[in-house]
Every structure is written in C-alpha cells, then in structure tokens.
Image 1: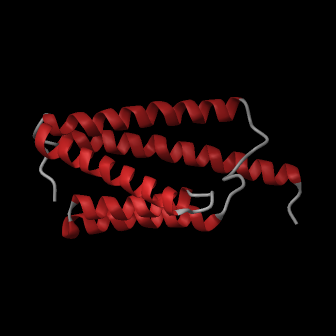
Image 2: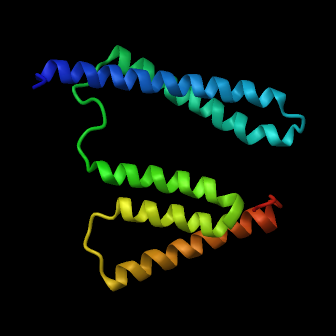
Length: 152
C-alpha cells in the first residue's frame, strides 16, 4: 500500500513530466512548421504550438513552485477516459476514408458516451444528438464553404 506523501510525490512528478512533455511537443511542432512552404499553412499550427508552450510552461512553473496535494489523474472512471481517447483516435484514422462528418460523428458519440453521467432518456438522447448534428454540420459548412478548407 502506498502512503499519502509517496502518492502525492508521484502525482507531483507525473504532473511535472506531463507539463514538460507538452512544452517539448509545442517546441517540436513549432520547429516543424518552419519547413512549410506556404505561409498560410503555418499560421494555425504555429499559433497552437505557441499557446501550448505558454500554457504548459505556466503549468510547469506553478506546479514546481507551489506543489499541490492533489496529483495524477484524480478520481474518475478509467473506461470513460479510454473511450474518449479511442474515439478521438478512431475519428482521426477514419477521416480520410469516411469523410469529415462521419468521423466527426464517431468522435462526438464517443465523447458523449464518455461524458454522460446522468440517466439517459429519450429526450436527452434526441437533444444531444440533434445539437451535435447541427454543430458538426455548422463546422463542416464553415470550413468547406466559408474558409474554403478542402475536407475529406
């Protein structure tokens, strides 16, 4: 059995390592964008990389200077986390083959099932699925027809 101080130090170390990993991931992404030939294709990844570096650095410094008693992943149900990650990966891998909307539906369904803690009712299912469909079609329309982004 792990005693409380040891568990907290493990959570503290894990949080520091995850923050450091995201700083490194942001730096690698930022470096990768220097090889893009089209300046317009650099803007979004560079912006996200800079925001990732800044927020992960803030997390790293604050967690290092002011350790927290809470560490690690906290309380929760492990299968919900696994389902969300699996749904996101499945959506990413199927998007080139199925298209934007079906892959978005996979990600939405996995995220909805993972996040739903209340009882399911017919009204709740209809409300969530209709609002999810409207949101996905709105994003599809925005990217395809307004921003002219080529989608699979």
